[in-house]
Amino acid sequence: MSFSVEDIAPIAILMDELRSEDVQLRLNAIHRISTIALALGPDRAREELIVFLQESVDDEDEVLLALAEELGRDFEEYIGGREYAHLLLGPLENLSAVEETVVRDKATESITKVAAVLSKSQIEQYYIPLVQRLSRGEWFTSRTSACALYTPVYDKVDPAVQDEMRKAFATLGSDDTPMVRRAAAKWLGEFMKKLSKQHVLADGLAVYRRLQSDDQDSVRLLTVEDLIAIAQQLTPAEVKEQLLKQIRQTVSDKSWRVRYMAATHFNELAEAVGQDLVREELIGHYVQLLKDNEAEARTAASGQIPGFSRLLEKEVILLRIVPCVRDLCQDTSQHVRAALATQISGLAPLLGKQLTIEHLLPLFLHLLKDEFPEVRLNIISKLDQVNKVIGIELLSESLLPAVVELAEDKSWRVRQAIIEYMPLLATQLGKQFFDEQLGTLCMSWLGDTVYSIREAATVNLRKLTEAFGVEWARIAIVPKVVGMAKHPNYLYRMTTVQAITTMAPALTFEIIQQDIIDRLLDLADDPIPNIKFNVAKSLEVLATTYGTTSQGKQLVQTRILPKLEVQRNDADVDVRYFAARAIQNTQNILAASGSSDINRPNTV
Image (tube, rainbow, N blue to C red):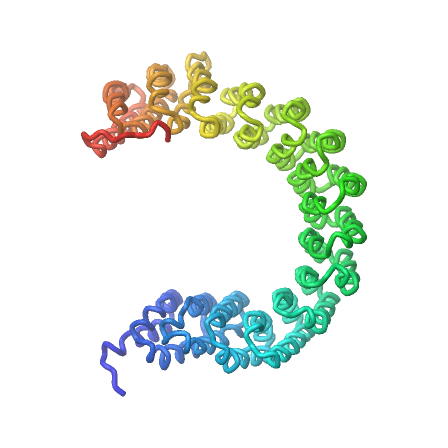
């Protein structure tokens, strides 16, 4: 059969680029294989392209990774549809046996996608032999990949084939190479979900127990999720009979990494094993993890406190959990305390108002005074949960002084962090509380000696405006901001300009026209050049924000541009530069909006 030059060109170009010494050319060629396949047509794509790709496994890892990914993107559509999808398994099988882990993982992911479109006969004729070849591969790489390929097709094959698959997976679970056993442990949980309870008890448990007692902690730590998957398929009585020993071994494992994994997934385990076993066994193990010698395990366990406590009676929480929480508040690791600070407020709804006040409030106060800002800020970020339980009055009496103390901290970074949390705190506690307790504090930051604090304070005002609305801002913020324009200290006057610049897009034209523009134009004549050129920047923001409406244009043309023209002739070079830039950008806005009036919403 002969082909014209035009017919041969696409595959020739691809092959030439794939053989190029330039990695980028080869990579580009791989990314274009769907286009090349389309140009070739289904028949030639199957006969030439797939064969060529099957031999193209000796390349850079990034090229192989791209190939594995492309073949999993519905590539069967380019080679004739689902009936030919099994042809993709050849190149992917080769890729799933290479040395680089990322390539193998992507190849097995693509094989799984291909498996979803295979018919039962294709699976039994092509997919199962592939899994068998990989499972018996000489190199551990192929056996590792095989572990991921049992689950996708297990429920699509006949019982006799299923029996063989369970036996083959069990063999992988006892492989001599730790990497293969690790892969078996990783995929065992998903495989178990496809098995009937009978086969879980008869075959699955044996594989799990062997992996759970492996001499490599990198294998054992992966069995924690397997334990949960198995427990979810058994009754509480069966869990107690079949898994209790393994649960005890896992949470008290000699490796901290295994205990860390157990702590991380403890709530899932508790929900899977049933209420009785939680009371009889898991509460003791959980307390053990909260008191673990390793900070990483304590940190992970701390993150599970509210979730696990929801499974317990209030009396048990007070007797077993709260004492541990009290100890964790004094923990030597800041990461443990930070994790605890994020979760401790979740206990308040479980204990109720009186017990929260009696037992948790002192701990909140202690954490709010922690030497590390992350601990303090984690407490503040969750105060809404406490507020719902004990009420705003008590919260303000007990916790507000600590918040104020943080806001006045000698470290400007701590003050800055508090400012950034203020909009969240304000929305949690409400507008009235904010006005009464925190409004003055927010305005005081505008006069801070550190520029970063003043800048953060102006951003804070804009976020508060967006949270509480422009009418609130007009009453609570705008008068105080413009009032600082006459302050004898130039830093306050500078802050007024910066606050107006930052807040302007969140306000309305009416507020700008009636409350702000006069004071801003007065500052354009300030004796300090820094203030004058910041006014030019602010006028530019006002012009570009509001200059597309008829009222805005009028304000720009009659008040803003004339003042900028005056500034363009200022004695200071910086003032002249920023005034000229503002004029240019303002004129561009006016020209772009044309003579037609564009209706602008009141808020931005």
